[in-house]
Amino acid sequence: MINAAMFVIGVVFLIESLRLGLGSVRHPGPGLLPLYTGVALGFVALFSLVRCLLAPGGEKDKEKFFGPSIGNVVIILVGLVAYVFLLPWLGYIVSTFMLLMFLFRAGGFRKWGLILLLAFLATAATHLVFSSWLNLRFPKGIFGF
Image 1 (tube, rainbow, N blue to C red):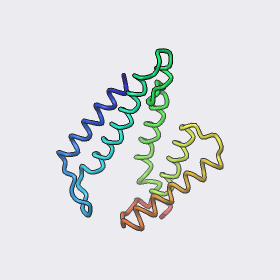
Image 2: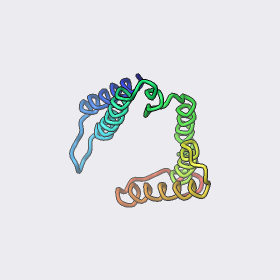
Image 3: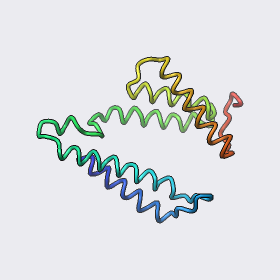
Image 4: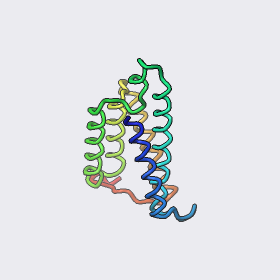
C-alpha cells in the first residue's frame, strides 16, 4: 500500500504549504511550489491506488505506479545528492546537463544520441526560462558559464 502512503504524503505537503503561505501570482510565497508538489503527488498516488484496487487479483502487483524497485530510488537519490554538491563547483549548465543524462539513462533510455539531445534541450529550456525570463542567477562554476 505504498500508493496510500504517497497519497498521505501529498496531503501533508498540501497542508504544510498552506501554512507557509501561497503569496500572489506576482509574488509567490514559499508554499506555492510545495502546494503544486503535494497536489501532483496526491493525484498520481490516488490514481495509482484506485487502479491497483480495481485490478483483478493477479494483476495488482503489475499495475503499481510506484514500482517495487528500491534500487532505482537509491540510484536517483545518489544522483540528486551528487548534483547538489557539484552545482556550485561545475555551475548550473554543466551539472544540470550531467544530472539529466544520468536520470534519462537510469530511467531506461538506451540511445545515447537521444539522451544527449533531451538533456541538452531540457537544460537549455530551463536556463532560458529561469535565467533569461525570470532573471535568476545560477552558479557559474569553474567554467564561467
